[in-house]
Length: 134
Image 1: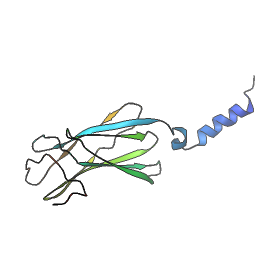
Image 2 (image 1 turned 180 degrees about the vertical axis):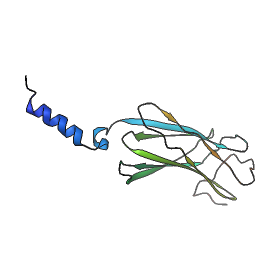
Image 3 (image 1 turned 120 degrees about the vertical axis):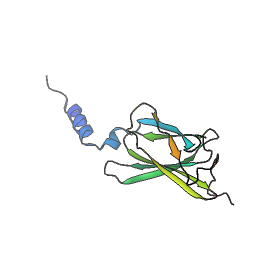
Image 4 (image 1 turned 90 degrees about the horizontal axis):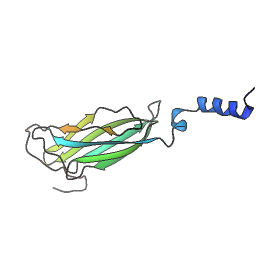
């Protein structure tokens, strides 16, 4: 018995579509905490910048979120894309930053923690948001 022509066309079309088109609605969550590396204290208001790239490494967009009082952050992303995560903490002495190992995305929640280290390892608990003044 032969398969209907429309079924064959659908299978072929699905095979030729880019991964992003095939997995449009496959979402997952990336979450973690941001800590002061010297003290282990969670950092509030650290910015977590998630850049999303397609399979040709063309930037598709960025999202910035801020950690809560426990240093926790989370973001939902499409599993068809690649991500780069950078954590920033603005202090009175400058900006601390750390790149986070990019996760392999799948249906499960991905955990990524970040540890920010300052030159003097001072005990800071909170970062400043860009709109805050000195």
